[in-house]
Length: 521
Ligand code: DHE
Image 1 (cartoon, helix red, strand yellow):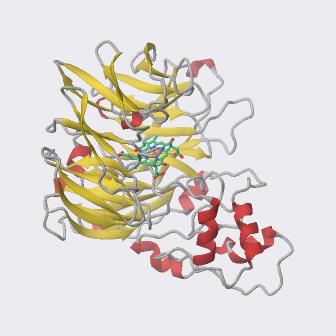
Image 2 (image 1 turned 135 degrees about the vertical axis):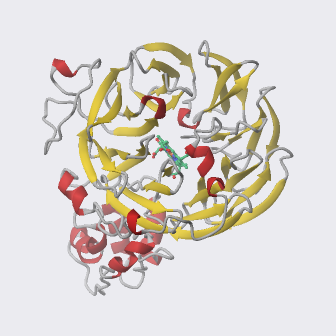
């Protein structure tokens, strides 16, 4: 039922598959047939999505049933999803909502053939002009993901003015990833679509669907490969970054032979189904490890972290057994260690990426959000800081001895933490609870809160990204009638508000491509 907004390039082809509106004078005898009659053309007869997104509980987790009902009734503005208020009865709409939030009857799979069939290349990179069609500092561009109506705004970071705004796939998640030169960007959506977009010509280059329920994507440090992490099916998918053609599907399953133990590199062959005796896992996320020329994968259901490298266009895997299930990774700047959050939400584990050994554990009660961690120099040593999902605290950790240096109390649990090498402040939001409209500014040298801002009372303010110079920053007012606020990073004065529809993450080309210490990678 939920139709996504789509990139310009695929819009035309979608019009050919617009929803079939048929008046239902009599109620169909089953919700299944109701679904097939009104929804299947766009969302797939098995609910895994076609031109519209997948309608499965795994993919709808971020949408309340109430909101889903409203979308069925009223449609989704600026998309192909029209309202069914005058087509379906109240009872039919309620039954459809129940249906799309129920577990599917069949096992869901997404084979390499299905991935290949979804591939399209509307604008091959070699047909596009190598120069930008606008004037701006290309290293100081920002992308702002607007969750409210599934769009992205491209901002000129010098003038803080929008250059363009374009529709995206439904429900992007995880940071968009840039090519090393910053010209192309790759977006990943929760229902598996990867879109390659040219920031010079403002066009979609290619798209492909990696899975049914995807977590995030990573681009290799040399810009050659894109790796996708899936919850459904239990796989990772490797693509050629040039046109997103599929190279390999990597099953996230423990091999059952001794030769492929955690000390050796080995390839994992995709089979139509994972043999029952093999233990498989959802893949929580994949990360690029530039100095290692590899990717690291977090597995949700197996107590292992995997390192993946591509040799002669083939993926090889090295498994690191961990003491417990680890999620949500942070890496030290030279990618010697990974810090993972233990599933019990009480500890961080530090793994030496060369040996695979756990070298330290950190007391981090309150479920640290390590993916949002940042580092800086403090009194001659490097510290990392992370907010927590469950407690109102920021933990500051000495990275030389892996001891907690300070636990800074905040006005509630936070989601994102950001800074910049040139700024004396680190920003952390209070994403959860009654104070979600507040944001703390922490002095990186006193380790105290310098100021607490409340830029839009009653509306969540969250997620900061600095410009390339560390002089200005953007903060999201996370609301359908929201905005990004531009602040002076030094005086903390508000400079400007740019209205946007539930802006979430913001991504500066320089900070991301240079692996700036104050932001995520
Ligand atoms: Fe995210 C990044 C996991 C819920 C917005 N989120 C990430 C990453 C991971 C992750 C592993 C890093 C990958 C990357 O950037 O490539 N997120 C999770 C979860 O496990 C969790 C808690 C539950 C879930 O259902 O997935 C979760 N995330 C959310 C949200 O509810 C947020 C606030 C809204 C949304 O869009 O769904 C959200 N996550 C984000 C954003 C980033 C992100 C904006 C990128 C941050 C950045 O600056 O890089």
